[in-house]
Image (cartoon, rainbow, N blue to C red; front, side, top):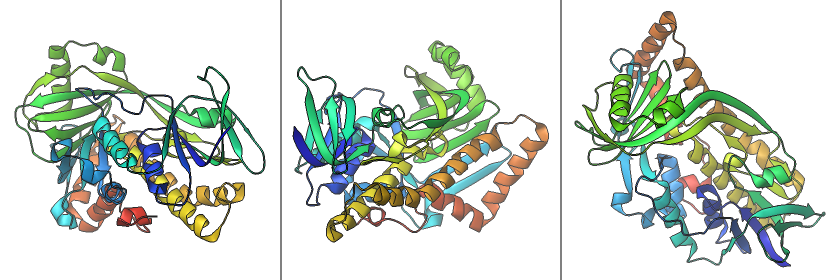
Length: 401
């Protein structure tokens, strides 16, 4: 039987971030994941939008400085529009908000490598293994590994489920989910364009769902396309795909010249009915999965990390049992407002901009024009997009928990 103070199940971006956030505390931390901890980078890696607040948190964790300048692209302007981008239109500009960038685009592999490079300087234990079962008592919980040739068990005072939308920790605890299927797919492809707009991101709302275009350097953009016929779009040849995408997105980036192989993901909204169980807490997508519109998913998960780490640090100072269910319940309640507001924000955008009715389309166009014309509304939208809505946890102020 191996023993640790905290075991984090899930070695992705959220789990690795939490391990780093806790690494300076007088705790024995284990990061557990079924996959190898050094994934090979792919030429068309899935990208993420890192909000300004999240960049500050990653800087405090020591991961952001490990990224090379080629690993990320600053976003200094966001263009939000309805349909063609010529009627309802709003611009959010970094300089107007007093920041150098509204956010940043980076690849999953680059950011994960930076997190693990920093973890290598800590005493965090990295353990490859798949969760097979849980058992617990009042003082600790025991994880059984499913892949071991002989039964292997790991005991801890707190188990953190950071293992994604299909969380094995959540399932082992018998926690159900409330799930809404948008009945659409996200199609992701990296495309070259003839008229790039450096450091400008686009969010287009079409009758079939939103299309995001994120700058990834030179003349290349990552397009994230919401479609009900996702399988058909994934299987199109490059010429047909580029023609259909150009027709849906418009010509704000000129002609679309080339496309990478398409990735496809189901679009869902999902929330765990409970975030805590005896000596277990869920964070990130294990607790809440959002529609990717506005790129809020990882940023919301990183705020889970910041608040949980800050509270665990306080518990260490006061010798409080951070695995106690009542204590964990206080953490969950502290996160509810942010998660609920962010969910309403992303879900509301999708619902508002999807209907085809002409009067609603005109109202949406007017609303976007009002946002562009009224500084107060634009600033409120920018603050939410940048993840800087107060009160900010310590990590989001570039401070250790």
